[in-house]
Length: 209
Length: 152
Image (cartoon, rainbow over all chains, first blue to last red; front, side, top):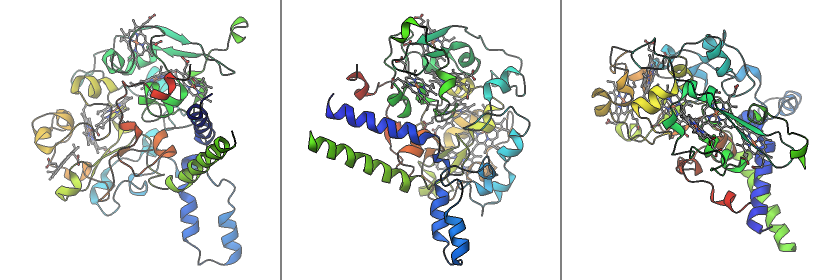
């Protein structure tokens, strides 16, 4: 195995291993900055139970507290808080913490398919593509159904994927770098940490070896 | 063999230190919020925050990314106010007909001055660099990762 490949493997391993936990590292910097407190309090602050994981209280924050809206601008206070909007939607474990597929299927939300006509329905295309995976991870099932509920064929074909089973080289490294499935997953659609949503088909006995 | 190992270890160390220093910015933003700042700072306006979550409750991706034609790339659409008042991009809806009109400057221009263009809470932002506005993600999605081809 070449040097380059080995480095790439190791980078990939570190990336996967850190995917779960990294949402809250900003807290570290903050905890270190405030150190005029007495020893005991400081020790408690430094040795919090979750050092890296973002606590539930810091998810889906209102705009004025989320770090990218200016709390000194009056417009910020007119915007909706995601927490309030998501309260009644089905939950998931990462990203917006909303299960968008379920929210759509069960009509919690009814996003328009046409800018003007609220009645227009998508042409859903029901075709699963199974991609076999080497090693221990279950095979990947790519479902056209859930995607064509939201997207147009031209969003993926041909710029991201040639529409032919097996014609595209896909790997976890490219997905993590924001290519292939990673154009959307890890940015707007559910994040890469949800391994089992994609790796959803257990291997058949003979495919295992 | 020996120097190979050293280089691998050095690479790991560099990567880990990168992780711990870089994750601090914008760690509380909502997943998928896009800050757009190609022109705003220079024009003396606050940069724009586009919330995906809010819009996807109301529209499928297809409406914006196929019908209106937004490219899948933060900052990649060269949006200006002239185009918006002519009905392009945000102006396709923020026209007083489908959604509130453009005179509500502060609802779109809502980020602190100096906030760089990027999509927030992305895998790449968390794993690589949150403050470089031209990271690997700006490569066109159509190019397959060069390194993966040699793997097989």
